[in-house]
Structure formats: structure tokens, C-alpha cells
View 1 (cartoon, rainbow, N blue to C red):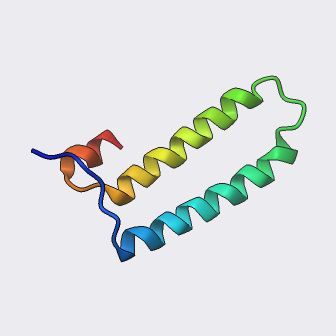
View 2 (tube, helix red, strand yellow; view 1 turned 30 degrees about the horizontal axis):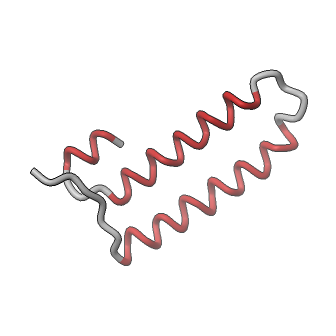
Amino acid sequence: MALGLVNDGVGGSMAFVIEAVLAMVLCYSAGYMAGEAAIVAFYGVLNAFGCSMMVLVMADNLAVLFLG
């Protein structure tokens, strides 16, 4: 079984939507999280969530979908 990602029109448009929403959340939370001690952990978890959403959108088969 080959594991991979698909980059088609629907996946590309959904990837753009995910990245746009993630960018807006990151920009908003920069001011909201200012001065917090766990800001590095927050951004790490938020970026990991965005990466897993990208894998969900671009998954080639069910095995990759469950990894995301």
C-alpha cells in the first residue's frame, strides 16, 4: 500500500482556506497571548493542529487519513 498526499483542485482550495484561517488565528492570538508563560507551547500545538488538518485534507487513502 502506497502512502501519499493528493494535490488536486479541491484539496488545494481547502488547503488555502485552512492556511488562511490558521494565519488569522495566529495573528489574533499574538496579541491575546502576549505575556503568557506558555506561548511557545501554544504556538507549537496550534501549528501541529494546522499540520494535521492539512494532512486530513490532502490524504491519499484511509491510512494517511487516520495518521492525520
